[in-house]
Length: 244
Length: 174
Image (cartoon, rainbow over all chains, first blue to last red; front, side, top):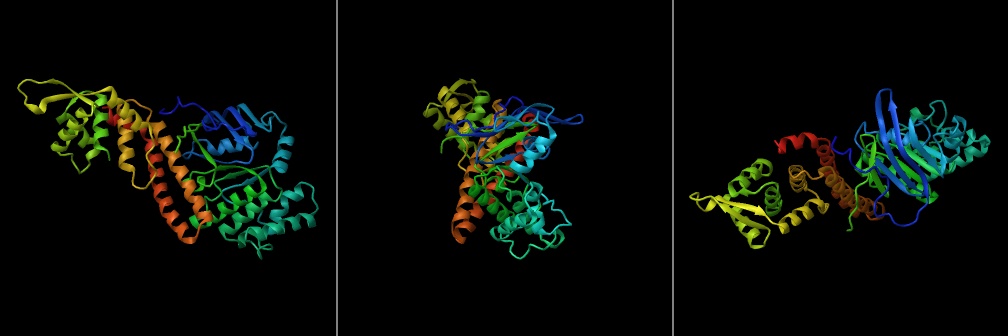
């Protein structure tokens, strides 16, 4: 291949300031059956940064996100969150970590269709043991912040794509996650609606100090991030930045 | 499109006569706009005067056009600098980027790395414009949009070209 000899790094070369690494992966390999998706991927993510993971379709970028988030367990290599190994953790602990520390936004909101929008947003809090009334109160606060006023009682089938994605964003943020994983969060939206969702996502993440790991193939979405890495053939590459 | 730098790049590949340079330039970079012979030789004269090219052997009896030109160390350094530096991100750069990619492949340089560097430069500019959109007026936002859409088109070309480097290498080195 053209780029197999590229150094597998996950941080820009000029990054000299001391920052807290919240998440890191070393030499990750993962295959779907006989098809390798990750082949030695390495990355470091700093606390509070918004990182875009880019790459062509099938490059392994979503698989990398799923391994970082503890949704998938790599075949080999290490994933650490705040220094703790995720890949060797029990499923029960990983599940609790995902619920308590991580938030998720996917391309299609994946709202629970039987629940109202407010109940969808409140769901992570209720799963975390917060009483229904308190969870719904917290959820309502996000409806105003994300421009969803008046939509609390609608079900997902009664929401536009942009509204549903904003509800999904509220659900991802309501438990104030340390890390927000977003996989093509605007992929099903038109460009203007996608921009509104990204504005809200970035604004809320900055306000909360949330680290964001954003998978996208769209440069305009990646431009909301602090930096980008590119996944190609299951490896992470970072171009050397040059002084302006 | 920089004709002098492109000719220098072709000379780094191998010492050549003016005719050969024009032929290769027209094949890879001319695309409907052949390089006039006069421009080839005037460019080579300037490059020689500036110490970036030297004149090698002259084929006897072949007339003045049969000079063989060689790139100098200074010329090679200039090509290296040009190839590795990202182009200022602004719309309609495809021809310059294309010339860089083709020459990098001809010279067995890391064309993929150059594209990655260019992508980073483009995304940095897009970040600046996105911030302008988020914080500026509607007019600022619409002007930023114009730049963003064009830069995005460049980036799509960069991705497409990056995915076809193996095939392009075969074409330009055959």
